[in-house]
Amino acid sequence: MFRTCLTTFAVALLLAATFTVPFRAFLGAAQTGNAATKRMPLLKAMSGNIVVNVPVTVTLPADYEPLYNQEDSTLGTFWATGEDLRAAVHGDEVDTTKLKKGLFWFRHALNVGYDAQTGKFIPEMTEEDLAKQTGLTNLKTTQKTVNGRAVLTITGSTGNRSVYLLYVWTGIDTNCVLVTYHHPAGNHSLRDDQVWSQLVGGLSQ
Image 1 (tube, rainbow, N blue to C red):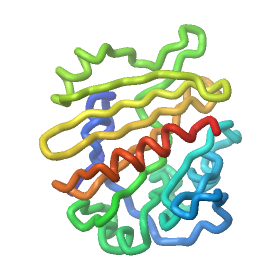
Image 2 (cartoon, helix red, strand yellow):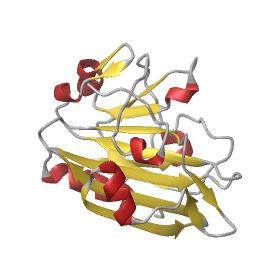
Image 3 (cartoon, one colour):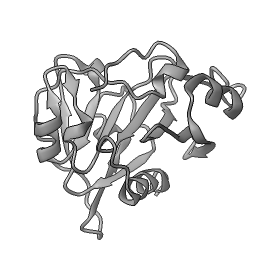
């Protein structure tokens, strides 16, 4: 079980999650020629919970469905198979031991922003400092620009879990969207790396 306490940038990397989300279908996701995936604007992946249409697209497995609470938009949107959502999401908790494939969580970042004047995400941290604060190993950070929007990816490992994070600047002040991917607890696989690479690699397509 994981619970949210996203009070610092380092804590965000621990992938704690607390949420209460009723299930609802989100229709009309953009399809590609690849039957195994579907692509859509970040705005749609966020269930419309951004005040601007960020010029970034995301690629998700074709069988993933969303969970979104219209009464509490701060919880963000989860994408996973219907089976995984029903098995893993209970009230305000998610149990990753119940996941069979994996789960994406899209929401507004609470403690990470972007300074367009300096071209840096804030707070700025070196990989060495980040590794010390989080205990992550195999840590890798990458920053680039996609259609005029800064994006930052962070990956690493802690215990038997792999960590996947993506920050996307919305273009509004310092506001960013945070996307995390959660694989089945204790069962990281090559598929998880492929699904994440697919998401990150398709941001500008």
